[in-house]
Image (cartoon, rainbow, N blue to C red; front, top):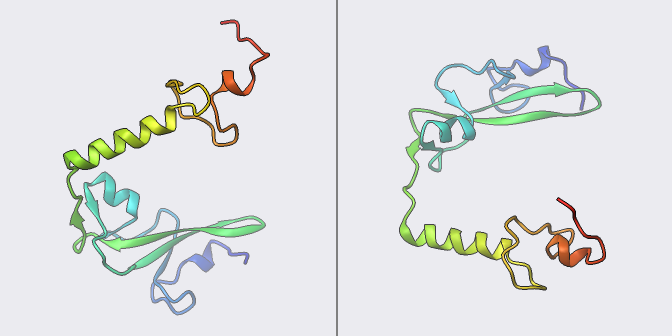
Length: 126
């Protein structure tokens, strides 16, 4: 699906089914998830109010869904239990299953173990 810049402007939603705007030209009062998060808000279960399209060559356009700011809710605060669970999950991602040590970085899933365990013959000189 190849779009031109002019094809991305459909504020009535006749072509795409949703009000559609070109990249960076969304009207005031609408924001993407990332923009909501930067404001300390979340969509809060509301339906998608529109979309922003950015045409690309030889590929489908980039799409960002828009939500209404007046219906957005504040982000839920982090509880101590969530903080502890997140710390435990991050520790598990950093622990090598072979040598059982904290690697100091997130173990690559492509290796499945820390770099010294994956390549024991090669020694790093720092």
